Every structure is written in structure tokens, then in C-alpha cells.
Length: 356
Image 1 (tube, rainbow, N blue to C red):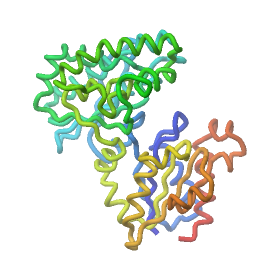
Image 2 (cartoon, one colour):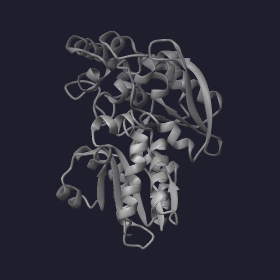
Image 3 (cartoon, rainbow, N blue to C red):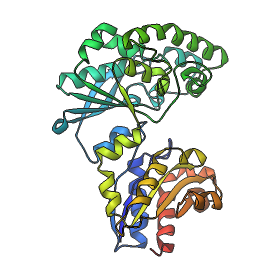
Image 4 (cartoon, rainbow, N blue to C red):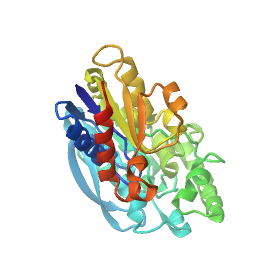
């Protein structure tokens, strides 16, 4: 039996690559005769580059400014065959680059300058297409740092005039307002109520510059609020938003892998109602349901840190089975502290019971 193992990341506990490897170890222990294909996935957030690096391009490391100005080693991918650069904003301005817990001060000071430096580095290699994965950022600067790093708005437009910019993100939030970057994501980045108000005003002031660059009202576009408004800056510079999961699926030839699979094993940190609204797991399940080696659709199994859906909800979604790490670990604390080993245990248990 051919088993496609294609998980998303498990939040901060496991990258998609590590999760795929953990699932494979458990599955092969129970069913050594099965043919396993590992294809970790991403929606554009942290781990985007590592996931793509398993299938495409060459890893390049650049020293760029991190979110608070200190130098960081940021990884990106150069795919010379398609003249494409794959960048991940979290590599240059991610929350994990803060060196500690986010605070109101870091929420205000964090900059996307390093992402601009990554774009400049990619351009120096002569690429014609730049894909930027958004997610996991510490920033709410509306991409002002990125624009500054490229020499200002006019200079940035000139540099990118003949380059296709793909904004890889599943976030649909606008730049401003109650559903905008500051209000929705600011608190996750250390902002208290006063800081959220400050960030909102700063974004509103900056938005006139972005609209001018775009020649249209860009700030209300879906995805403008992604990565603290970095999405708005990239859209203003001519970018087009595409689902991050779709970008990764295309780059890793996921369609062909799903077609050849007899069963698809995927997963994420928390399997809940949000999962069913276009995230990696739901996109993968939709693809698996319509194809499969037998022509009638490959069943999808979900392995997650926690499963927050009822059995009837899971069945209604067409998922063949959903299993939680916490059930084999015995507690949320153990599931998170020993996530990789516990996921391997869960995969082995599921494989032992699977009769496909």
C-alpha cells in the first residue's frame, strides 16, 4: 500500500518536516511493507522554506536584519530551473527571532527590513519570480521596513517592475479596522490595548503611501493584513495573493502524489473547525477525495496534537479518521513536551489498526 504522509506543522512544537518523519517512523514500525512517500506541507508560515527545500531549489543563507535590528541568518530557496526565489518572512522577522517573550515595546519596534533585504538578495540572482510566505511575524509595520530596505517606494517599484511577486498566505484580513492587522494579530505579538491603537494609527498613516504606490485602494484587499500588513506592502508593489497551501502543493507536485496514494496521512497541532476552512489539512483532503490510486478517492487520516471536532463532524467532513496525540500521551503537557516521540507512538497505533 502506498501511503502519502503530508502534515502541516504542529504549531511551535514540531515543524512539518519533523512531523512527517515522526509519522513515518511510527507507521513503518507497524506496517513495514507499505510504501511511504513524505511530502510535508505549509500554508506559508514558519517552516515554508524547509518544507519546499525537501522537493525544490537550493538553500541560500543571507545575513539580514532581524525584527529588532540584530543580524540573523535567514534561509531562502533559489530554484534556477524556474528562475524563482522562495522567501519566508518569519526567517527575517519571525516571533522566534525576538529572543524572548513579545512585549508592547517589541510590537512597536519590530520591522520587516530584513524581508526587503531578502528580496534584494533574490533579485541579485536574476530571478523573475519571488514567492514570499507570510506568517509567524513579530511585525506590524505594514511592510514599511521592507520598502525602506529596497530604497523607498519608487525605487522598489522600479526594481520589481518585471518580477512576478506571489504573496503566499491563507490570511484574508484587511490592513485596518476590527479585522485588521493590529486589532487581530497585534495582541499575539505583545501589543496591549494602547499599543494596538498606536499600531492602528501608524498603519492608517502609512496606508496612503501604499495606496499611492498601488494606484488603487489596496488596504481593503484580502490578505493586506497578513504578517502585520506586510501583505499590503507586497500587494502595493504588484504582488498577487495565492493560498500558501496551494503554492506548496504545486511546488511539491502534491497532485501527482495524491493521485498515486492509497491513503493520505496528514495532521496539524489542533484539528478544529478552522481546519475545515481552507487550511492545509482540508485542502489535502479535498484533493484526496477526488482522486486516489483506486480512482474512487484516497481516504484521509488526520493525526493532530488535539482533536476538537466531534465524531459526527469528522464524519460529515468526509475524514476517514482523526486521532489526537494527547490521547496516547495522557496529558497536554506530555503531548507538547515530547511531541515528536508521542506522534510516532500515535502513528504506530493508527497504522496497526488501519485495515485499508
